[in-house]
Image (cartoon, rainbow, N blue to C red):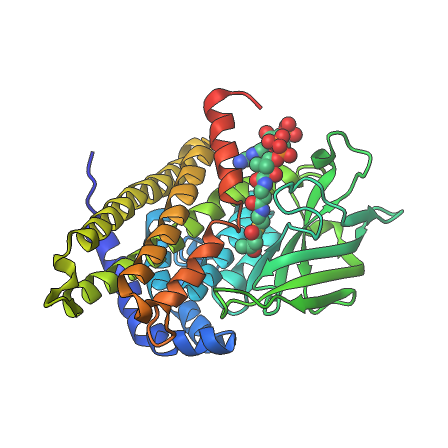
Amino acid sequence: MNLSLSDEHRMIRDMARSFAQKEIAPIAARCDETGEFPYQTVEKMGQQGFMGIEVPEAYGGVGMDTLSYVLAVEEISKVDASHGVIMSVNNSLFCYGLLHHGTEEQKQEYVTPVASGAVVGAYALTEPQSGSDAGNIRMTAVRSADGSHYVLNGTKSWVTSGPVARYIVVFAQTDSDASPRHRGVSEDTAATERAGFSQGKVEPKLGIRASATCEVHLEDYVCPVGSRLGAEGEGFKIAMGVLDAGRIGIAAQALGIAEAAYEASLQYARDREAFGQQIGQFQMIQQKLADMKCRIEASRLLVYQAALAKEEAKTTGRRYTLESSMAKLYASETAMWVATEAIQIHGGMGYSKELPVERYFRDAKVTEIYEGTSEIQRMVIARLETGLR
Ligand code: CAA
């Protein structure tokens, strides 16, 4: 068992680190403040191969492995979690499902432009009434009499990158009488410039403010049957499989946020003096730093383990749901806890917008919520472990 990174992985990590420092660090605070989408740096991420890092070269990507993807999301999120989620959603929630379940034409049409970074992809599962209960989908996809297309109607919410995406995978009921209900769900890919598509309200968010999130309305949106992914009624299982991949990206994002908060705390513990000594000499600060470090390293092991399980699945086909949920749960709760302690260590300065620590705190929170809340991850893990429902 070898826990150290290979030379190639170290090279990818260093490349992502220097890209993030050079291109993203100078704009991160401003984008957080204004909530503006960072088009230019996202375009550069595309040029560097980050937007399709795991996608084969034949479909516009750079064909690296899952650990490379995780290392890049981690490094980018360490500087700015908004860029991290934009990259993660593009790679995992959009490209992954299409690569695994798409036809050759679908891969060429949708994956190639998105993986190359020419356009952005998004994933629309959640609806106003169905967040955690993802199978309770009300968007309908009614097949035309000649069988050539579906007509989609309904609303999706909390679509990450929705306001800027060219293509969005959407999940809709093709059989409203199906029992259980999730077996009537199918997946289509919608092009956002087509008639019947409209963007709803843009969400004003607590954190990851530079990543754009919105509602999406489909009204008599016509989708050729050839845009459906997999068989009719298989959409929910595809959605769940894609989330297994996506949750590893969010776990890597959380790991990056935690590391940023920890490194800022270490520096502050050395620089700040109180009662005539560096605050890092006080045992209560030392305890916080030691616990932060241990939780971060434990998260790292879970996140990299999940990456290796996903990589292995490419040849074995084995599901890595357990590894993915454990990594997401532990890394996101670690990010939130570490960011909270980082503010405490910084005292008043941690609460100030002069330093990025309060941004790490606001950005960390969403990792416990999106792509499945901590409660959902615990449910998934416990179901798999006990075999009970
Ligand atoms: N892979 C493949 N198939 C899976 C699966 C997986 N990981 N998990 C479940 N399935 C299959 C089951 O085998 C079952 O198949 P059958 O029809 O053959 O029985 C089917 O899917 C239904 O499974 P469950 O009975 O377990 O479904 P459930 O209704 O109990 O729900 C759940 C399970 C885990 C709670 C699921 O609803 C869930 O993950 N909820 C959270 C949704 C979520 O993460 N949403 C985030 C959306 S994206 C986002 O956050 C925004 C963004 O853009 C970043």
